[in-house]
Length: 246
Image (cartoon, rainbow, N blue to C red; front, top):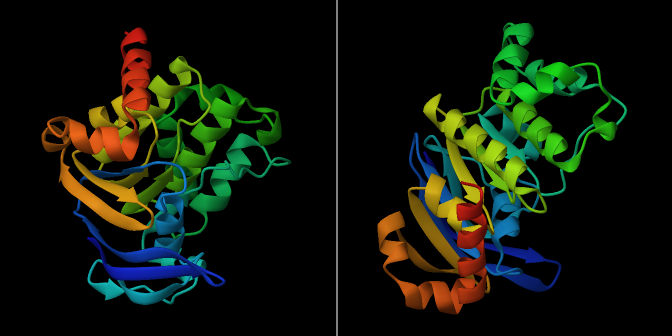
């Protein structure tokens, strides 16, 4: 579905991505792992056209999308949930979702209702201003808003960062449910235990390159990769957090 071939990207004179190649197949959750500054968020931004690739090719459903604007790429069936939870603070929950639902033709009311099915807690807050929501509720809203556009592929950037264990569990359930309803997901996630629970395939990044690719079982059987590129302490602490949630 999504294929990156030898993709390079720069911020000014800084060479950030050094020949990234990866793919996401239809109906799969693929996770991009790596330490802070490895280039994970830049990879998502480059896919979405926020950062233009300086070399290489990005294709989606067989069509080249590298070089297109973010708006045009979105119309192709991609949705991006950035790490900074960009809600429209002055609009209500319903209005935030409606904006995305109206981006494509069809019954926007039905799409709003379907998006809210992923996060029932938002149903009781339809008229509440998005800016007054908690961080976890805003994250639910950004994901629900993305789902309202009925994307084929969702790019999720650190969806559980800074959230309580309860909220992490809610977001996890929403991710799994969206995959069950047909969406593919490319996930950037620092919570190692959560990532290995929901994703099926993993790409590990270091300094702007892909240094490892494998399935869940293969990654969990490669402690040297976890230690060198993810950090043993981080992996262990995330697992403890995960088990404490029950």
